[in-house]
Length: 372
Image 1 (cartoon, one colour):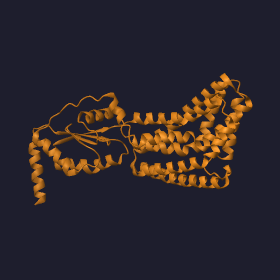
Image 2 (tube, one colour):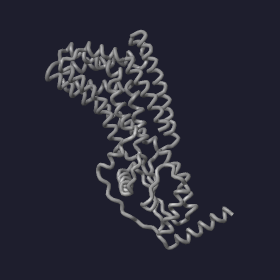
Image 3 (cartoon, rainbow, N blue to C red):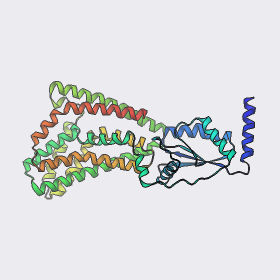
Image 4 (tube, rainbow, N blue to C red):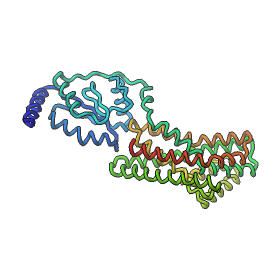
């Protein structure tokens, strides 16, 4: 009897739909989105089964800015204020977030078919609406990651050595300003370029469900390993106070290469070209260590920047500004008399705390990448 009832209901709805305008359904998706895949494989095919010929489904990739703005326009016009974005909008009247109830969703379609299709025009979205969607965990996580990356022990140890070189070479006043600006600028642009390249590679992976899942789970596993190593480093350094007992640091060979680059850069005839050379080379070499934070942050940005690709680029830019901020602060402090010994003492006092915080951060990032 249930099967007969469903057939009769479908025939009835088909009769309503004949000669009438089909119900427009907007589906907003992004490549690699789990919820989108669930809707696409489970819900949308059932629409065609229950309401044959009565609905038209338009799919919009919100990685394209115009589609993202169209989604915001509809949400704004319908007064949708949930922090979770909309996935499905029926007849530009009824809006659904993730995992909509099938029966509730189909009841809305049935109601629209009975009442007749209307096409209300939503209000235009104001420029600040998009900015309100930048909330959630990702923004504060990117801020924290950028700052942690900028003051991690790898970067601090390199800065300490660089400061000692500056003291020996007696770079002062205007030359120190030129060197600092060129070094920080080269470091910022180099790290941004590295992030841009890695982000594009990760973005290509995101369109392949299995590959994306492997990348995310693999990254979470690596983060948990790094968290364990970082915690062990904190315990070891607390006991011995020896830098050699720290696992997560630049190797002796890499440190030597960085030191050689700094020597050559400071021996350059132009202080600006020397600063650019040092900033570029040191950032590339140092990324072997700093990438422990950078790559997971990029995975998180890609995972949670569902609303639009421009948002991802803004988060990437913000991350790099925060990464280079400690460099700027140190150079300003050196200009006003900060001594190498002071920075070195501060670094040694905070090794244990920074390692524990880094370990905690790795765990939180892993959990959010998997369950967020």
